[in-house]
Image 1: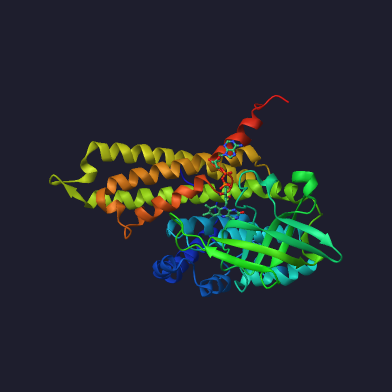
Image 2 (image 1 turned 180 degrees about the vertical axis):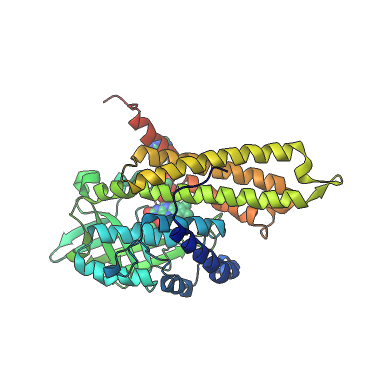
Length: 384
Ligand SMILES: Cc1cc2nc3c(=O)[nH]c(=O)nc-3n(C[C@H](O)[C@H](O)[C@H](O)COP(=O)(O)OP(=O)(O)OC[C@H]3O[C@@H](n4cnc5c(N)ncnc54)[C@H](O)[C@@H]3O)c2cc1C
């Protein structure tokens, strides 16, 4: 294996403590969370107590002011623990950074320390029943009336949607202007007119509370606007490379974990009086997959380096997201195959990882949208 050069000994010590947390507090409860369709809020508080939420948040807002590599470690260790019930990444690395970057001081003081401690859970609501990839076409509105924005509409597929205490809502403040009339407003779930809908039953990510959200004349004070009115789309675009890298980081870590489970399994399982690993097909298949995962690892680590230097381009992040999540699905499919019938059984981690992987090609921008981003950077596209 090519040695990784990103992490210091402090990052590795942190990794050990995250790993212990996953083993002690997450893995034993995960089956229960999958059955009930959401994780208990208590684990969020424990994660907060241990400094595992919002690690890069400045200390004045309850974080440790740590560098992004601590966030990378958290994402990798959650993937390695085969856990998909906890929407920690979305909360810490998407919702909190929007508040930090664009929120007025009072809003930051109100929410960020509680998000870092796990007392409050954050969600971000972009997708609607009629618009996911085509976000310019959202219908949810936040129209100014007297002293408030009045939010109306519905959102779907929202991660942390059922457990959340605050939601960043992408809404039209000027519906006549398309993307240029879009804003980000923070809706506190205690506000009148806000309701949570069903927890959606999914193919995978069964312990994660993906939900519908409804807004019926929710009066939102103007101080809950993030940044400037009508600039929401610009803010969304700025954060996308890091959001997409998070998916790529998880994909490579999960693929590595799956290869390890499979290596152990085929060395033990016997068929025709031999171990499954003694068949040339098994060895060659795992050799091929290990090579591709290694290539992905090197590329993703280099992208992380560029991200830390603030030089990662949107197209590089799109390449990482698209290629690693396609690879993750391929690796998981082959690993299930090498487990035979046991690979189809829920108690084998590879079965769960297989169904969990599928959505990685869909959310965070579908892989087709990633190819659009990449092709635009190549100067390709419809002639105007
Ligand atoms: C488990 C889960 C969690 C999610 N969490 C969140 C969340 O927390 N917050 C949130 O806002 N959303 C969330 N989403 C929504 C997710 O981001 C969207 O599902 C995704 O962006 C795709 O949008 P869509 O479902 O409307 O598909 P559509 O946009 O309808 O796409 C359907 C198909 O058409 C293709 N397509 C669309 N446009 C183009 C194009 N221009 N060129 C080529 N092909 C195209 C797509 O690639 C896809 O194959 C989540 C989704 C899931 C499944």
